[in-house]
Image (cartoon, rainbow, N blue to C red; front, side, top):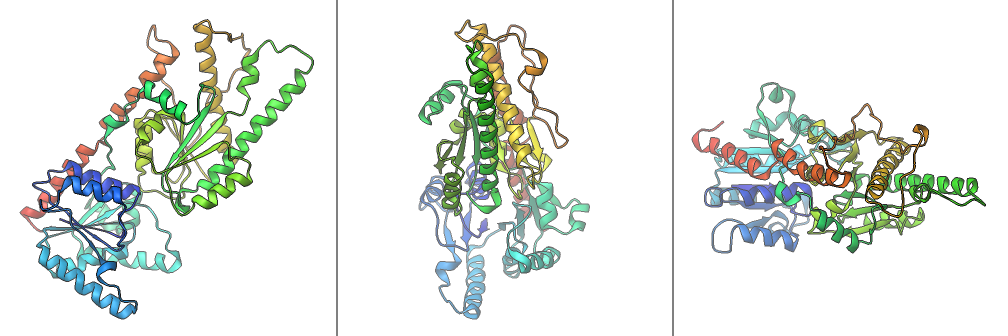
Amino acid sequence: MLHFKYALKTDGATTVLLDLCEHMDPSRVVCDFLLGDKKVPEHVLERIRKIWPEGGGGGRIYSIEAYCPEKDPVRYTFHKILFCCRLIRQGHYDVVHVHTEDAGRSLILFFAWLMGVKGRVVHSHNSFTQSGRMGGVGQRLFKQLLPIWANGYLACSAPAARWMFPGWLLRKKKVVFLPNGIQTESFCFSETERQECRQELGLEGERVFALCAVGRLAQQKNLAFLLRVLGLAQGELRQKREQEQVQTQGQTHKEPWRYELTEPQLRLLLVGDGPERERLEELADKLHLSSSVLFLGERDDVPKILWASDLFLLPSFFEGLPRALVEAQAAGLPCLVSGCVTRQADLTGRVCYLPVKGAAERWARRILEEAASQWAEVRQEEARLGGTVCQPEICPEEAAPQPEVCPEGTISRTGAHPGEDIRQQRIRLRRQAALQVERSGFCIRDSAKKLERYYDRFQKSCL
């Protein structure tokens, strides 16, 4: 197999590709990689070497940029075509598998067709591409021409399929849905590791409500919007605190839980790196959020950070089927996501969809409702354990607000089992989430087996 992807970098599509390779039988499915770019992160190289040790066959990486250094566009195009044809012919590949969100990049399958390759697969990983006006024209053109040189069609979601393939392929059910599976057992919730990670990140105490976003710091992810939302939420908390200080001035505050409820304790964890990091750091400083936002960079302990968090946020402009959202659900987190994200991604019933255009206040309000709801649960648990802070009797209008049902979705909660306290209920629900995700078909082992069977079709006959 020859996998073509413009670049192997720290992104969801690369992670999905490498996970699939790791969970397929390396003796049956031997893969090489053809890249447009020549830069490959060291941790990606290490993963490939573990799958196919040097000298064991497979795992070879070829770069078009490295083999075609010409700057003249005509000479570059000629050498690129020559290089791809020679590589495909000499490699004797049964399948060439293109991973992209740009239909124009599937053109390499035309050369694979010329070289007699049986399986020519296009795999759509996204529902849009930021390629400008001319890129949009090219997408529409190549989208219609794509079936001439391709005979295999994969997509991570329905929106990704509609973006990449002509409508008649979808109507004839030629497009196969391949879930962006994860290693669900790696995300099964651990309360012990949650507390250790929170301590490491300076999130000690349950009244710190941790928001989390995982992904490349790029324009697509719309993280500047998230910082503005956090600023609005922090501002509302400060305003409530000032109002209560005025109302209780000169009085002994007999109910300290009320005061602590409105104290600004929101923290935003941004996991990932990318071209937007410097701009986001400047924006956080401008909005006076530097102490509330933690830029964690690329991490190899994402499950622990998700366990340490209380709410997952994904305000992207466009997505295929975001792997990070699948991981967050497996870790047991409620999720607040952009309305552009496919409903196929709601695997646990705890995903709320909200628009992002002109909706910063709605996002801030939803975050505060979730924080208040969790804080009320903490207070009840302290009262049950006979802590120093007791839960007072609250009249209905003063009760902590519960999440409202929004038209785009809801963040639901399940009732406790008999004899189960709030903390035990929370741990149980978070641990059950990984099993829910696996039963939804988003286990990487199932996705890898499905892809193996799909490849087998090209061994038997040419589609």
